[in-house]
Length: 380
Image (cartoon, rainbow, N blue to C red; front, side, top):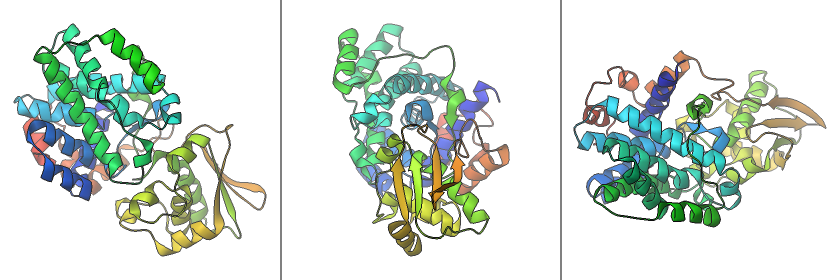
């Protein structure tokens, strides 16, 4: 697969998530409150992330499309530009987001920040600056202006706030670029230095190796760091082998921080629960979008009674092992959807069609108007 194809797969994946997610309560609320272009971008950013099914750049634990794609698409639509313009701006914003998140990992996570909402403001600003055809100095000013409002907390995980703060990041980047285009000035070096001191991150720009090559297209609509445990549980489920007695899921400490909920009181918390997603898969197989409408009673009982989580720093962040009776039952290092274990083209198309029937050909013609694609996804 070429890099251009990887960007197209990631953007289409985000678009399908947004087309389905626009019906979810946080996105409906964002749309009801929307005012102008920035409001539409906030809504699309929220819609694309609300399912927690959108692509993820694992080296930075960041959803690199989440804030960038809505800003690029809807600003281009507003300016009557084509999808060629969108994809060029999106690719640059994607790489900017990924580079900053990679350089700032794990420090952002350890301080409680949500890397997507912090780094996504910068990527959205760069993508918007490219759509607006800003000069290099004005693009740098847009980045610095975006950092003035960068934010988003892990405390929001398992609530509507996680998707909403991604929408905020997309709109922040858009508004920063528009402010820069209008002539707003800021000391860019001072702001980026302050970013490092305040957020604990490290400033970085894209390198020669495209980050999109390490992008992860999610196979399951829940926290990425539950996916290896889901795959491990699926191996046992496929064998019809529900382990007797207590089982332990061994994960990296970062996975435990990302998915902290043990007793999933609602569907959102269930997405961020390693015990629940493991138990659900042991009983029913891997979850799909409809699986998180509400917690499954049997899975919740199994999770509470027999599934324990322990951490192990010797594992990689996306790895998991299921253990029982003192032995490793299944170990998964590369979950389905990861760059090392990607879904095939049929599975990728199937995911898009499941989320939004008929959308799988939305990027076949990049000369098509951005407004046409945004409308097809229900984002206008």
